[in-house]
Image 1 (cartoon, rainbow, N blue to C red):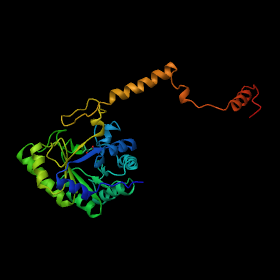
Image 2 (image 1 turned 180 degrees about the horizontal axis):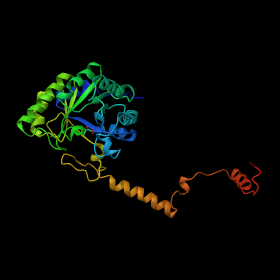
Image 3 (image 1 turned 180 degrees about the vertical axis):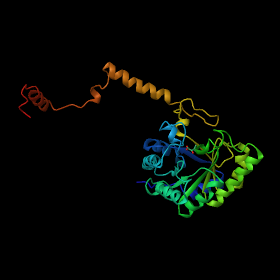
Image 4 (image 1 turned 90 degrees about the vertical axis):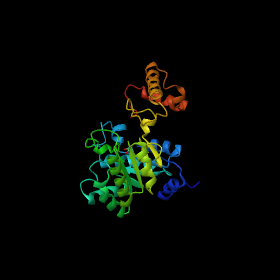
Length: 290
Ligand code: KIV
């Protein structure tokens, strides 16, 4: 059996150093993880975006630790090579540092993740350091941080003014010093993300942050056209699977209703003598064979 070469933090670091783009995709379950692995992505993020893509919530705020762990476990069973990052949900790391370390640890111990991701800059930097000091690798997330979208005034681009861009830069340096092995930049002007990425030693992964980041991430359902009408500018739909999926499901319903499915090729045969005996007894009115 061939040995699978697992993506590691040093290999991600090397990619940045060599100017090779890092690829990250979200996945939320076993088949999704297998597909993303087959595509060759370096990192699988079990994002809290699953609150919307899989659980049907309007935003990421409501997803719980137990729900995140449930999905992380499934993903870890479908992935051998990709580096696995579990997203810490809202309120699992903000209240208490000790609780944050324990929750981060659950992603590794119970759900087989390689690292966790946390949103925010200065307010969570000390927590990130504490988690890293406990031996857990952390990916940061700056710019548009969906868990605090209400405070940011909605889902809007961040770091548009010189002052805001400098604050973003400061936060990025702080998270690097706090021990993050990588940072996500979400919805940040391209030149800002490019400049900060150059200044940092750790790799940056962009979503709506332009090509100047060291890598790119997109959400599984968005790439495949499974997110309905949700279509922010920074998403590229690489396929529109919703139409062929609905059409296949429709065909099933039509064939069942029309008696074409299941056909003989989908049904199991039985030995003729056994069948004869079965029918003879089953059709006895008194059921004395029971
Ligand atoms: O939850 C998520 O999918 C994310 C990515 C968009 C980076 O955080």
